Length: 460
Image (cartoon, rainbow, N blue to C red; front, side):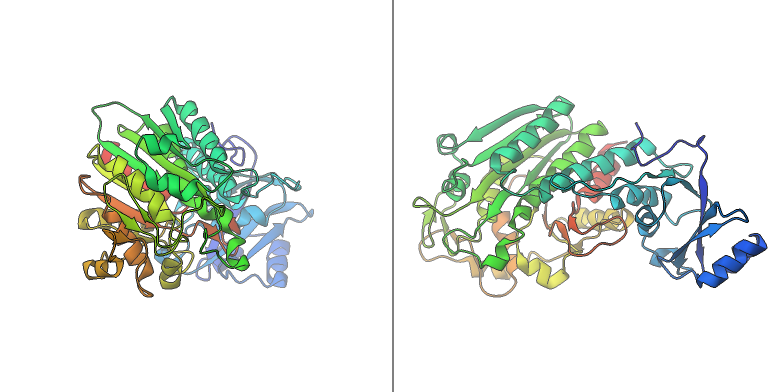
């Protein structure tokens, strides 16, 4: 079914002319004299992101012009036309001239209208788009719904979305697609050999857990997704400053991206054997919190000295990745809001990714660009492994003061040895400011590109 922000082709609609400084004069000349005069009086000049609602002689809306500015399609943000959903009055619209990427423009129309309404009512607008010809409306709608659902999860404060809430969301998704679901909770984590997940989450009033569901035929290529589900991160006994805790509800953004990707895969019925693993914990402070200097056992058998309790995400991921690796899957993908160092290197809009598989890296970069879901490869620089050395254990959970995202990724690779390919995404999961298709607040990063990659690899 089409998304509610999309209209059917038979519905009456108003035209949107997408123009640049080269095409605008020719389109302007086709308008009635009064409309031309109005556009000139408004000073519309086809600057990127500018728009003008044009009247006819009776004062009704004739249509809309929207500026793309650049003549070079490669330099235009393919989400840019989606900005219109926040600018236009209620109505049904269509692109009278072709968008640089009609599919992404349609997706951006839906995603750009997103707002988080759980705690505050907002006036709902009805600005609907007739999708351009050739757009797969069902797929765009499915992808948009998956992203929107996960944005809601990230935006929800921990008071209403603790580890148990993450489990409830995962269970609901599994039931939607008929996946086989289980969850290992509390002290059962110790009984089933997930000691690091237990250690990180045991201080919380809500017990830690490992969420695990599978879907698809047994003989299909095995794809395993792992998502960091830290519902809130105080930093533990190495407590964060107050300002650093304000956005820590988004520390489960990796699990949200994982669930979004799983929803896309199952919704498209891709021919893969999918497994989803989410270690869901709250890194809290109590008398039984794990401590700096503790040495933890891990599922992999690697002993880990705790250099800093605020480097907890890699610990819970380590146990989950070890479990994923035991099946020797064709591909392991993990998503995690793991390091501030990745933000220092690349900023909030460009997630870092790490893999030692060059062919996979090229595919990730190619699909990231094609889907307007950008990422940037960072190196697994083996020399930096020495920064994780410990005098008392096999490895320390923190490295030196530099290359923090690299040493975190290197830590994770210690828990993956059998999988045929592995890629780690260090995401921010947040938009600091509103841009076309990306409202301020929660964001799902790298999931759309991985869906396109998996569809390209396995969907034929």
